[in-house]
Length: 498
Image (cartoon, rainbow, N blue to C red; front, side, top):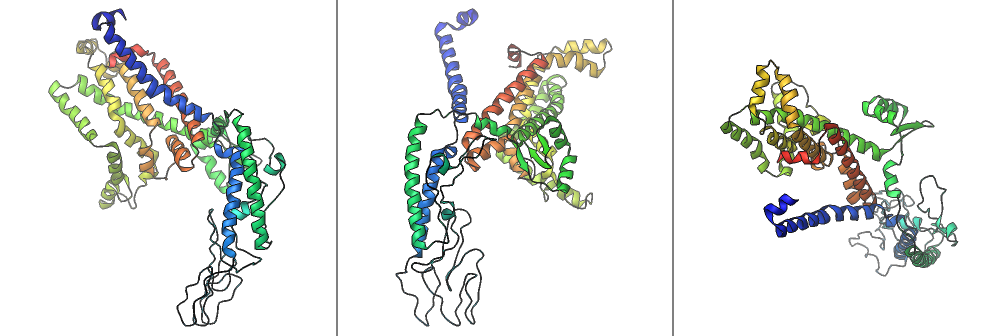
C-alpha cells in the first residue's frame, strides 16, 4: 500500500479503490444478492392465494364459455344458399356437408367427420379444449349437455395445495372451510353457470383474505433448493431399465445415490444428475484444452523465433474476430449428418452411412476447446515467456530427457498460467450454453446451463432457476478453491500471468 501511495499519490489510489469497490458491488455482490433473494422466495403460483386466484379465473372463464350455449340471434342460412356451419347455425340438408359429433348422424349425401370428445348438434363444429382454451359447440338455449371444457372441469374447490414433499395432502375446501363445489357437466347449463358464479365469488373473497394473511408472513423458504435434490420417478419397462442400468454414467449415479430403485420403481435426482454430469463434462473439456494448448503455448513461447511466434499467434487470433455464435453455427455445417466430414467420408467410401457426431459428447468437448482455446493458451504463454531459456539448455546439458525438462523445469515455472487457464476454461465450459444447445440440438443430455435457462424462460419458474443458479455458482467456486489448493497456487501467484 505504501508503494502505491508513493508511486501514484493518495488521490489516484483512493479513486482506484473506489472504482474497484463499485465494480465489485454492482457487478458481483448486488446480482448475487438479488439472485439469492429470489432463490429464497417461494414461487407465487405455489402460494395458497395464487391457487385461489387460479380457481377464480377458471370459474370466470367457464362462465364466459357457457354463455355461448344461449339461443342464437342470427338466423340460419336460407335454403339453397351456401351455409357455413358454425356454433350458431344448422347444416343444410341433402347434398350439404355436415361435420357432426359422435351423437349425430351425417345427412344423406353428406360427409360425416366425427369429433373425438365433444357432443355437438348436426352441422355444428365441436373443437375440444386441449390446453386451456375451450371452443365449445352450441346446443341451443337451455340445453342440458355440453362438450368438455377444461376450465369448467377445473372449477372446483377441491384444489390440492402445494406442500413440502412427504407432507400429507391438503385441499383448499378442507383447510379454509369453504363448501365443496364443482361444475358438473351433467347439470343443466343454467345451473352450471350459477355454480361457476358461486365458485368465482367464493374464490375471489378467499383470494383477498389470503393476500392479507400472506402479507404478514415471511416468504423465505428453502423449497427451491430442495427441488434440486428432489427424486423424480422415471417410468421404465424392465427392458428399458436393463439398458439404462448398463450405462456407465447410470452405474456411477447408482453408486453415489443419485439414482436408485425402490419397490421396483426407478427414481433419479435429475437436478443433481444434470449438475454432476455437467461438471464432469467441464472437467473433461478443460483437460482436453490443456492437452491441446500446452504444446501450442510452449511452441510459441520457447521453441520459435519472435517473428515466427507472431505468425503463430495471428493464426490463433484471427478466427476469433468472428462472433462466437457464428463460429458455433459454422461447426454445424462440419459435423451434421450431411456436413463436411460425413460428405468427404461418404464420397471416398470410408463409411456406409453418416456418423452421428451430434449425438456424441466428444463433439461438444472439441468445439468447446476450439471456442475457449485462447483462454487457455494466453495465460500459459505469458508465464512461459518469462522463463530463462538457459535453464532449459542447462537441464539438457545435465542429461535430462524432454519429458523431465518439462516436468521439472517448464511446468513448475508455468504453474500459475496453467492454473489460470484451467480455471477460466472450466468456468466457461461449466457455464456453456450455446455450444451444447446448438451442436446437440436435443440429441444429447442437456447441460446445467440449459436447465437453468429452461427454469427461467421455458417453465417460467424463475425462483427455482435462481436457486439452481446460485447453488451452481457456489459449487463451481468450491471446486476452483480445491483446484487452487491442489495446485499449491495463491491469488498473488496469478499476478505473474500478466
